[in-house]
Amino acid sequence: MSELEDIYALFQNGALDEALSAIENLLWTDQNNAKAFHLASLIYKEQNNLGQAHRYVTQSLQINPDDPEVLNTMGNVFQDIGDLAKSRMAYEASLAIKSDYEAALKNLAFLHLKANHPLAAIDIFETLTASHPNDETYRMGYAMALKDSEQAKRALEQLDSCKTQDTYEHMWLRATTLFDLGQYEEAVCLRLKL
Image (cartoon, rainbow, N blue to C red; front, side):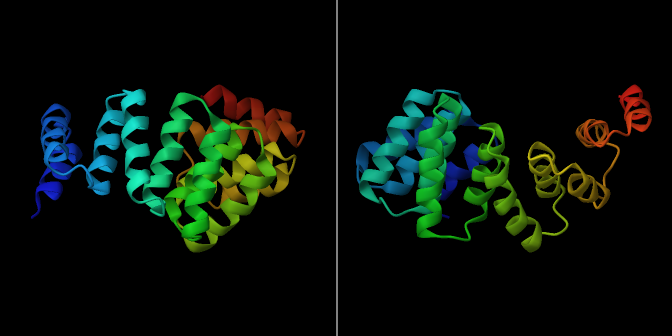
């Protein structure tokens, strides 16, 4: 296992301070290691130190500007900062390099929902649900995008195809979708269960 893999394992196990100390030591000796700068940005992002996360992900991109994973991380950092336009551009840049990069597709789809662009989200969720038909997160996102674009009947079909229908999120979305369809009594009964 390499030193970088050891540090990543620390990060994955939640030993953030130890991982941060180790990555800073590695970067002290190897200032051209794009993967180390990327890992440092992930650690800082996890600690909610968005300024440092942005600084380190930018340094990683300066060394290797064509890494879709790093561009996706840049999008996540911008989203956490609240700059949705730059976040979208980073995700799109990631996808321009690797069009089937699932993490960037997912992040861009949910960003479109957050930015109130459901039609753009629908296209991406259609792709994600086609390639991952059993992924409940994608089905729920697809249903939200359909509902938000005033396609409540199609949204309800997506919700019906979910295997897990007893979660709060599923029941809430189903109730609001039923309300949009004018099925008030069923919507109210479902809302009372929440």
